[in-house]
Amino acid sequence: MTNRDTRLAQVTAWARDGTAKWLRLQAGLSAAKAAQQLEVSDRTLVRWEAAATLPIGYKIDAYHRWLQALHRKHGQPTTEQLAQLRPPAEPADTTSD
Image 1: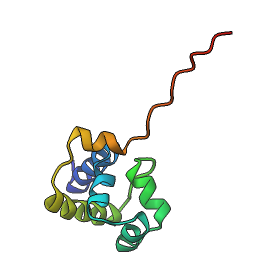
Image 2 (image 1 turned 90 degrees about the vertical axis):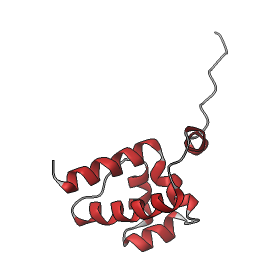
Image 3 (image 1 turned 180 degrees about the vertical axis):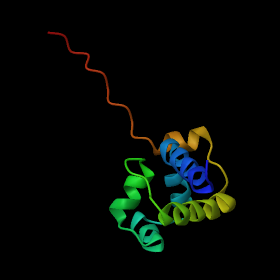
């Protein structure tokens, strides 16, 4: 596994568990402002945070460095903090026919 593969694996894990978005929010950055810093579109950043798509090439390195800097400053979120980022579950349909 190359260094870039390792960085992509960490970026992917942070996107999937919500850490990437949590770090951005802890830094007080909107998706637009963070995307500007990373030189990508807002939509791209939001999709990276949701693990809908992932950065490729040198963007892996840039996004990983950016997240690492935020992680050093803000630390690792707790399970409870990550849970607050998830949308509430849809209520079950309790009607019967």
